[in-house]
Image 1 (cartoon, helix red, strand yellow):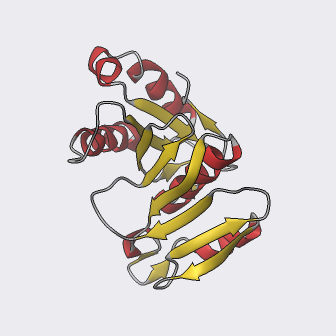
Image 2 (cartoon, rainbow, N blue to C red):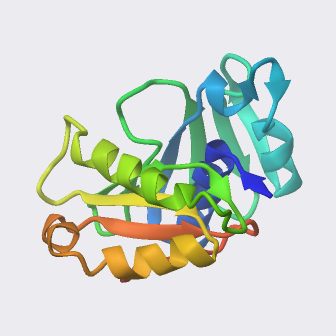
Length: 181
């Protein structure tokens, strides 16, 4: 089962809110390539969010806009602006959280795409232009046996630790592992 990048991003945004980590607005970048590939719809953000109680309040183009949930004071704002990180929010402690998310499989495949996806995400987070020394940087990838194994190993890599990058795994139900690692 493939998990689209937009689904990983929205699961991470909802998890940050559900855990009480997000202070106010969680910004999620979703562009057309995350929703439709070669004319085929691979993920529909509005029904996905609605099924989980998130109702669109302020509309933008297509799926962009502000989404609210009756249980939470924080909102999710979806946009398609590049270069800002896939999931960005101010945390309760005042620090900014920036994550780059990747698509993937819920089960490993023989080709091991997890290596290249994690490396690509690390490259993207390391090259974000607007970063403060107090920001929390992360990558988020779908959880499967191989990605969990790599995440555990690469969290201990000296330069990943020095840069303070969190390697998060997100399963198909929206559970996130690695935030406190």
